[in-house]
Image 1 (cartoon, rainbow, N blue to C red):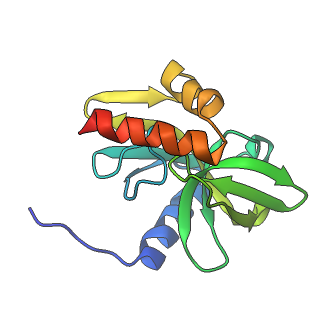
Image 2 (cartoon, helix red, strand yellow; image 1 turned 90 degrees about the vertical axis):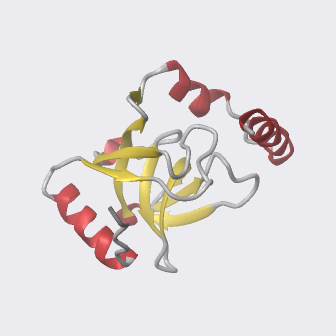
Length: 149
């Protein structure tokens, strides 16, 4: 069976519609920005409606940036109406968006036949134990990539 390629605008419009209707959605992962917790091409993430009270440091969310990109990244901080996000696999790049442009939260990660729950040890390590320092992050990511290959 072949792969169907859908433009991001169409895909995420549908996802936002499902989320706004109160449904959870499971989508495949692309990109390395959330390594080591979320793996591209093999993992799927479960997106759920966002409770505005859960807009807090450490949560992983789906956000729309001003340049039109949709990202699934971790919240670093919320200041007023601004949300600062960064992928676990990014050493220094950070993005910002408004509170209104955060659409969903990640509730689970599916890898093969296993679900990584939001409150699991693996999830909590990535949330609390993963370094924020660009140098330490670079070292840890390098070690992770060497171990995987």
